[in-house]
Figure 1: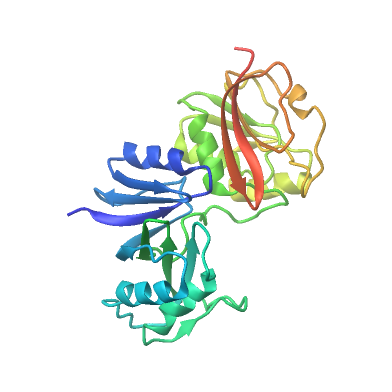
Figure 2: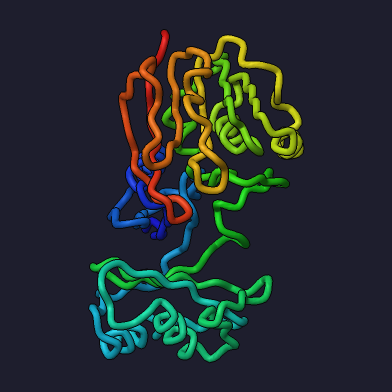
Amino acid sequence: MPSEFLVRTVTGLEDLTAAEITEAGHRVVDVTKRQLVVEAAGPIVTRLADDLFAVHASVPDPGRTKAGLWQAVARLTAHLAPDSPISVTASFTGARNFSRYDIEDAVGARLGVPYFSRRHGAPPPPGTADLRVTLDGKAMWLGVRPHAVPLHRRAWRKATVVGSLHPPVAAAMARLADIRPGHVVFDPCCGAGTLLIEAKHLEPGASYRGDDIDPVAIRAARLNDPAIAWRTGAGKPDRILANPPWGVRLPVAEDLSKRWPEAGRLVAILGEGQRLDRRWTTVGEYPLSVAGRRVRIVVALIGK
């Protein structure tokens, strides 16, 4: 029988992540907000997912009440016998008469091993096994992370700067860019290099160039991937990937997109109210929620 997994995503990337996983030969059983249920045909390799958990158990969603929650937790954990300290991370959709911390503490209280609650903001000690509990309106799921750290943590990421993009979002943008071997890919506001580095993982046969007005960002990008051509100019790019300032932590640069060179395709992530200039014809938009902000990935054709 195939192994079953919960794949957690950024809000808005559910369908793109499902497409990535399906193309790899796995079966997506269900899609809800921020979550896919996947029957795996083998190891799941995904760059768009936030995290991945092997399903240990599931029961019907308990609904709104605490009494229903406690009954569901008893059934959910009936056959779970951890032999080391644990933490629990929980989430749910819809209105409930309990909090995520009530879910976490209810699970932790039943397992008979040291449990580190997040209720008061203290992180669990390093190396603590993390269980994942989700309530999606249909089922209550219990999963165990098969990796030491969440999937969104990248081994290449040695430095960040203000405004650095979440790596799974960057991976989704690279996928939408349809980068081919031999393409020149340019990022005009590269920051610490997240977009180009994720694109390079997707298509190592392309050429990547990044620029930024901030020398601190360029130093961070070079630390993250010294092989990419940072601050060498755009040349004649086939693709542009861009994460311009949204006006939240960094000020918006007015008409920034007017200064970008022409290319066969642009993929940019824009904040609320931001628009591309008239050279660009938008052919796709993907609304997301990133760090509590409503943003959107825009795919546009220009010039060529």
